[in-house]
Image 1 (cartoon, rainbow, N blue to C red):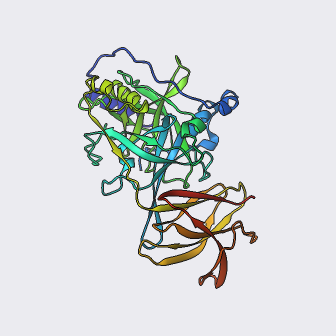
Image 2: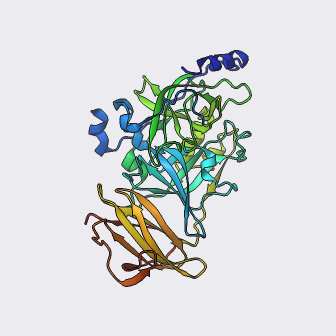
Image 3: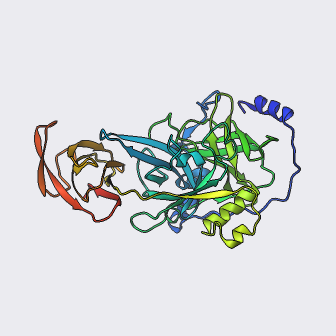
Length: 403
């Protein structure tokens, strides 16, 4: 291992402080029926050992769908859109585990409109998107990376997609395991590094993780290569007994000499079970005598309408134009926004329930009705646009092309 010497030195200076204890059973993974056949058949430390999951070995392939990108789009007053990303992993049909800081913006506020995209690869949305509804995290989390070592971990509850299906019903989910004696040694991880191509999923196997901090037993030292965007990536450990990989920790932060994770302790595994059964803070939960307090934070539904466009084609670009009323009360028109095959993007957000969209391919074929003409001065042309009307706030995604 590339930093085995450094890890060994740390083990010498920070000795073991607890004897091994009996290991509790892990939760069970889930593989959707339609995947059964497939299942059968800055913190860069030295050399970068991450590889695209396009090259993933067969024994890791089924897990790539269970890992997804957490994406938050922030619409600026200028009309531009800022994007922040993290990684999360499904551990039940509608729950993911990730890093706690992934739930918040730079001001420490919950993200306004955050979505989980399971198995997104090269920006292609293969398994829909799922809005984050609420987050569960340690009450001691402070939004300070130096202070939050070992407690930068969270569970997010996801809403179903527009078709009513949950993420795990489509992509499956991992089992998680909170072991009393963390199995120091080789681990694997899958995530979405920000220093690679946008929306590309990468993996690494054979890196090392150790849990030997005598002052914080939930803290991991990891020599996997890590960059922003991989926060919340699963630390996966193979079990020969169960013949599967379990999530036993998440990546939380990176540094020049060592990267860090927050592990799932036996108590946290117990908390996770209550959360994923919908029984957090129940009488039974309260009777457990939990030592580490956790809290629930619900995402507030904003009085906004978020409009997304999705390219349904596999091999053809689309161009999107729009006309909508801004929150300041002015109408704003623009285009043409490039939408690549199988990609999705935010177009605008508004408080007005009437707006207009146009979608066309490079050959000029139009996929929307012409309910109105709007002059786009940038192109010195009138563009026919389709009228859309909604009577509630929320997120609305419109698919175009290949029809």
